[in-house]
Length: 174
Ligand SMILES: [Zn+2]
Ligand SMILES: [Zn+2]
Image (cartoon, rainbow, N blue to C red; front, side, top):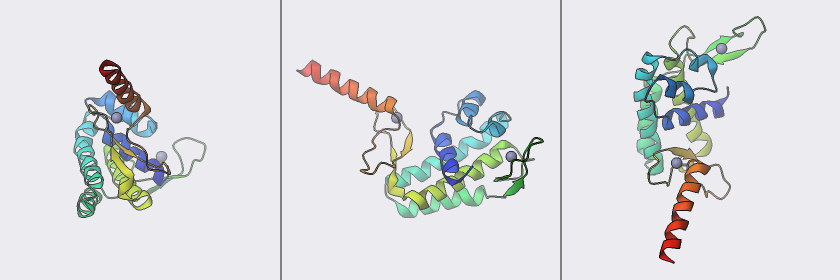
């Protein structure tokens, strides 16, 4: 995983419902090392982390840079990186770095990875590149990497939904 992957982890955790363990596992599905081991304790541990990530993005969307600093640094202090080099988990060597001691719960590493990923994402993209979905019934945040900064929705699904609703209301009025 690289820094972009850790930002992706942060955004998936931010936007996950975290209603139960399967929802958490779905949010972490790209990383079987985490998702296969995630349980109730991880769910309980990661809910406040997701809330902290949302506070960061809420401040970023509000262009409140002091708030971004405060919220990111609180997350980094509470979920510090403790990097560990690994040669892989099977006979074939597969060198990589874990963000925390692998003997700890998945939540410990996921929280550290997400806090680091979002901090690095703000450095790399700038806080102004993050947005909140424009669909009325969607609370998701997104990263806008488009050249013209035109992104308004978290997903094509939300964009289509809003456009179809606007089209229907225009038809009714017409
Ligand atoms: Zn590993
Ligand atoms: Zn959305």
